Each structure stands twice: as C-alpha cells, then as structure tokens.
Image (cartoon, rainbow, N blue to C red; front, top):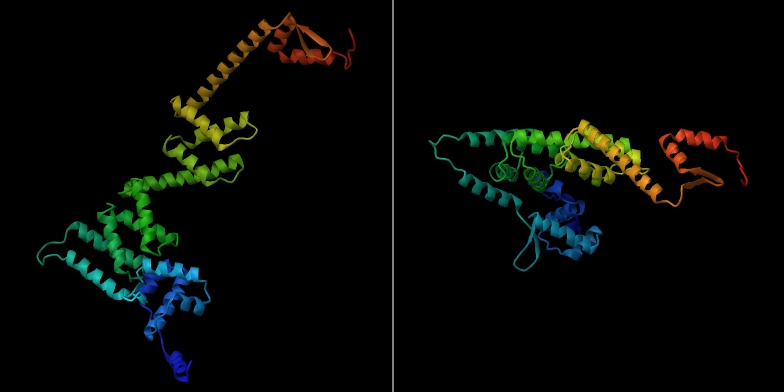
Amino acid sequence: MKSDDRKKLLLSDTAVPDLFISDYMPGLSGISVQIYLYFLMASGKGYAIGEKDIASRLSVAIQDVKGALAELALAGLIDRDERGKLKVSDIKVAEVERYIQRSSREEVKENEPISPLNEAREKLAGSIESTFFHGSMAYQWYREIDTLLFEFGFDPDVIYALFQQLYKDNQLTSVSKIKYMAVQWHGKGICTAKDLDAYLMREETVAVTLRKLGKRLRKKMTGFDEDTIRLWIEKLAYPYEVMEYAIQKVCEYSAAPSMKRANDLLMTWYAAGIKTLDEAKSFENEQAKLNSARYRSEKAADLKSGAGNIKQNFAGVTYTEEELHRFEDDPNELMERYAREPSDPGPR
C-alpha cells in the first residue's frame, strides 16, 4: 500500500445508512454484517471485490462467504451489475420508491373524510412506532401493518399484541419474524381481541398443565408431551382433574407409567362420552366390577375343566375343591392354614 493510500485510509470514513442499522442488521448473521460493511468501504473507494477477496481479507472460508452473500442478496442489500460484478444496493432509494408507491395508492381526495379504519390504522402505527421503535420506524413496517390489517384481517389490538409479543421475546428484528407469527395466529383462527384472549388462555392452561403433570410423573416433559397435553385440552376438552386422574390410574396398574398409557385411557373415556371427573370415576368402578366378574367366571371355568377335585398349591400340600373355593372368598384363611403347616411337612 502506498503512503498516500495509507493516509486516505487513516482519515477516511464509511457512511452506514441508519436504515441498515435499524431494519436490516438485526436480522443478519455476524459474517453477513462484516461483509456488508467491507462492501460499503470498498465501493466508497471505487474498488470491485469478489468472493476470494472477501475470504482472504476477513479470514473466512469461501463457503461461508458464499452463504453470507446469498443472505445479503435475499435481504436486498447487494446485487450484481451487467458484468456480473457484486455491488451494494442503494437501500435508501429503494425505500423512498416504495414510500412513493404507498403514498400514491393511499392518496385521499382533499375533501374526502378519513375513514374510521384509516384513522385506526394511523393511530396504531403511531403507537407501535413510539413504543417499539423509539419513534423511528421504517416504511417496511408500515407496509407490514397494512398487510396484517387488510390481508390477515387482524384487529388493531391483535396487531399491537403481535408486536408486543415479539418485542418481549427479543424477536422484533425483521419483518419475516412477524410474518411467521402472524401466519401461526391466523392459522389458529385469531382475528379479534376476543380470539386472542381465548388463545392466550389456552396457552397458559397448556403451560400450567405441562408443569403439573411433569411433577406428578417426576419427569422432564418434552415437546411430544406438550403436543399430547394440547390434544387433551384443545380437542378432548378435558379439565386438569380428569387428566390427573388418568395419570393416577395409570400409576396404579403400571410400574412404568407413561404419557402414552394415559393418552390411551383418556381416548377410551372420550369414546365412552365421559367429560367430567365423576363420570370417569364411575366408569372405572364399573370396569373394575366387570373385570372382577370376568376373572371369577374364568377361574370357575378353569376349576370345572380341571382333572379331579384335588388341586396342588404348595409343595407337599393338597387341598380339596371346596377348600379352594373358601380360600378364594377369604384369602386370610389360606394364610392362617399355611402358617399352621410345618415348614417341612415331609411325606404323608
């Protein structure tokens, strides 16, 4: 580098658009920001740079450079000229052109009154700008607000809550983030403040239920467990006490209780038309009686089909069929009888 070039580099500055800092930079990777700044410096001095130049100057792998350039191109920050050389896009000019197009479409006749919807939109945009953007919101966010109002059909309160949620989660970095969440909310049928309140209440119920059942099962709940609980709440419409009772019943007859067994039990109840805890308890009591009757019937059939009337229980001890029936009615009699037997009866 010549002495004059060193002096120029020492005394020169690179202008970075505020628009880039406020609207583009939060959504870019670190390497993409470095490359963009290097592009601004090189283009300001009239230099044309390529992928190899960037990789060498910033000590970055060529594959990482290609990925970052693709990210910058998708964001509209760089482009290629007619000779295929990389160049920096003028984002300020592009933003002004979009603003002019927006203004021309929204131009209202001088004597035409402002509609309540337009007035609500302006109030909403001003509130979002002052609350979440420190009074300086780019026009792409205005366009997004229009999209949420007119294409998604969201009420102003829902749009404000959408911005508020992303701001709370530190995700208000790019328009793509808010579009993604807007699609999710729209898919869940959220349009009005009432819809949103019901949705948020369901989400709170899912979170609380997930935490409580995790403690009962003494396990760390996974995303699959959350999906299962969401099914119980949103599709089966079961209250927490019914879900807890299902977990309790599973724990009674299983050494290794699981969400799958609880889900199978709840599905059985749902198919039987059970909706409340009392109905579930009554159903389980009836099932226990049926199972007990079935067991006795099968046991009697086995005894009837057995050879002779003598049954062998313990080594060296025999009982008649009448005695076996008494033991079945009163197990304590069997234990007392066995306790009276000598430990080694020997041959009889």
